[in-house]
Amino acid sequence: MKEKDAWTELSTIRSLMERSAKFISLHGMAGVMAGVYALIGAYCGYRIVYLNGTNLAYRQVYINDPSVIVQLSMVAGIVLLCSIGTAVVLSVRKAKQKNQPIWNAASKGLLLHAGIPLLTGGILILVLLYRGYLGIIAPTCLIFYGLALVSGSHYTFKDIKWLGVSEIGLGLLAAVMPGYGLLFWSAGFGVLHIVYGLVMYYKYDSAK
Image 1: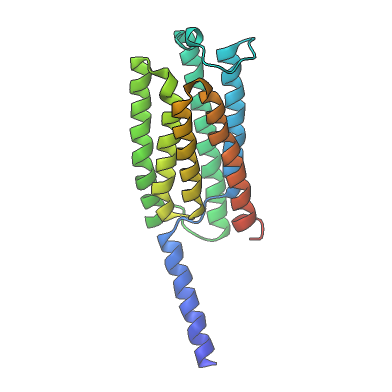
Image 2: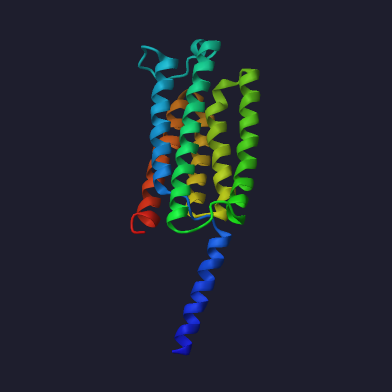
């Protein structure tokens, strides 16, 4: 019995250490909803950029229109806010259900290590917008977002690392095919997020 109790105590200590070192309150459905928001945003972007056309090829004349750029920026901002808001709400709810703090060393580490690539990418995107290098914005979004996920994966589920690697791969492909940036953007932020979110939900959330 003493040996069994010792193993139980060791398992409990190990679980507590993992909880303190890893942010495990991320909810799979947050990924699904982020993907849904991204696909809706991509459709709105398609309607804004391509108007009544059916060709997904790059259209410089529309993209260079300042009003179009403003509209696309607004759509991207709304998608980002909805995604972050949903992730925060679901993470807080999951943390409360597990009686875990939402703000701890792990969440701080995740925010720092994912935030640096995201902030850097965001600033670079603003520079690209200012300079008019619009054809490589979609690849830049995907690549820096992927780098943020890989960096932040050390403080949360390892599955996020592979999502990040996939985003980087799509970003590199989009860089050599700039005319199809919207499709790659939809695949990376939409489809991959939905697939990742469903995997995470059934792996970590549905049976909890």
